[in-house]
Image (cartoon, rainbow, N blue to C red; front, side, top):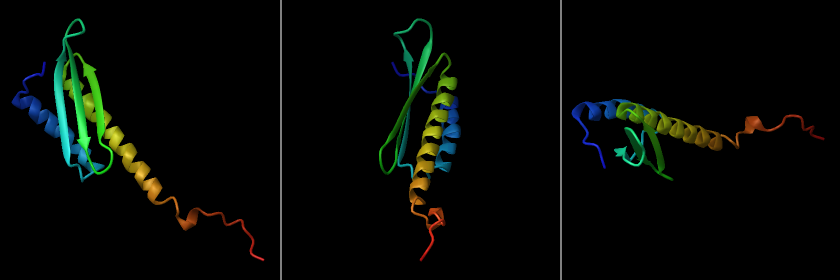
Length: 108
């Protein structure tokens, strides 16, 4: 079921996966699986990815007729998920900031 990864495909995965480390430099493990879907007619590739980080792991899956396109879509999806997680953590960290409190209160 799994596709034999060529050197070019491995290089493409590594090159695209480097941008995931922009949002989360503490990634413990990144796993990318590429398989050919035999259940559908025609040629369909499914790329599955799992990012292990501190906290809940992030998993995603995409499909396309071309293996390289499926890998690109998978990395894009994982990148969006990591960016969303980083933004949420940043907002949570600054939620108690004193500058956000209302200054409309009048002291008597």
